[in-house]
Image 1 (spheres, rainbow, N blue to C red):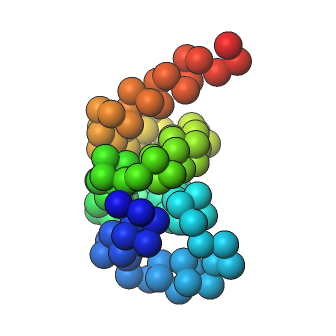
Image 2 (cartoon, rainbow, N blue to C red; image 1 turned 45 degrees about the vertical axis):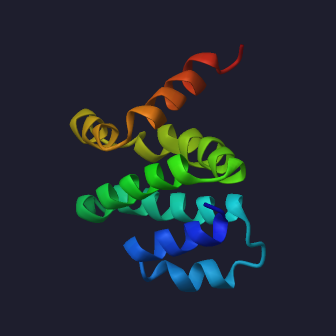
Length: 118
């Protein structure tokens, strides 16, 4: 899957994101995942669990089926921002969010957290 296919996948879950993705002047894997990550942050803040959980599933699909650029974008943009996305969540909500993130992405998250600064 390339970033254009990822855009199609994302718009299946969040049709309203299409305008933002289209008006983005730089269209590539990183900008696509950044915009999707920003939407996920918004869902977390607004406690929009239904759409959030569908979006987290979609992020996993994009990661699993994505080309190298998409995979790198997910790791360096989405995974890297998980702490800031969930920093102000209570412990229960944070655990719920992480329970909807695939094992593969959780392993990458753990590796980033524990290798930071090494």
